[in-house]
Image 1: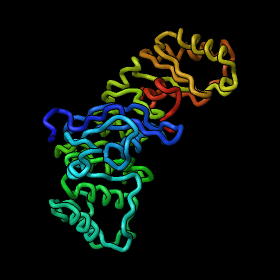
Image 2: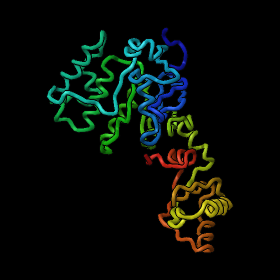
Image 3: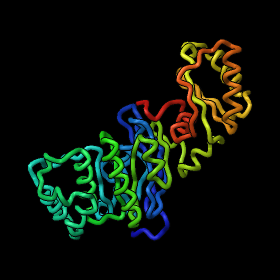
Image 4: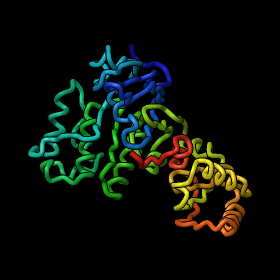
Length: 319
């Protein structure tokens, strides 16, 4: 049946196992029509497996997903009509020309959008007559998105679209994604780049070890730390210390004026504070008192990376 409610995507308790390993463990969320919805987490968190089950490419061992009201298992033909997919790694025919390959994919659908305006939207109009093998990494990614849009889908899936791209190519793709959102496309974006998620996504689902650990707007996720500022530094000796010593250290730092939370990952400490100057002064005083050798000391605003570390005890950059 067609979708009539506010949510265009409904994911309910998806599970995927490989032998004794559970890659996705009860993932649930809903995506509103017209929003950019981010799946954010480190490599191996289960983002791609979740997306592949939503696309009907992988059969879940439990749970269900509906896209525009269609069940991804029982109504896969209908699902394919309303989605466009850019895979994490897209294999293209190197010897075909850009226009030829888009026209070929367009022929697979009963309805498709005009090819030349689509190439213009992806800033590929000047490359229309070039062979795929001569494209840069960023151009190939934009071509993969063009192919995903050729059937004018309601929902566009982008799986790690900017991985391996240089900063300029990443920014170009960001602009394209934001333009697609302005046109009312619903976009599901997986990434492990926190800046990308913050810029592009209306809401973010943080995933770690196959589970949802948080789901909210970027601003609300950062606000959940209860502090806008962070003091970050390393204590090289602390990684080898006992749990009792680490606990005592966190308790001592947590008593500094203005400090709301203390996180310790390996030898790196982060103090979250609403009174940056007072907390920094207190930290320096405490370091002198105990003979701590602080290294790589910096102050900054809190980020999605901090949210993830606080909730999981590890970095988004960790595999």
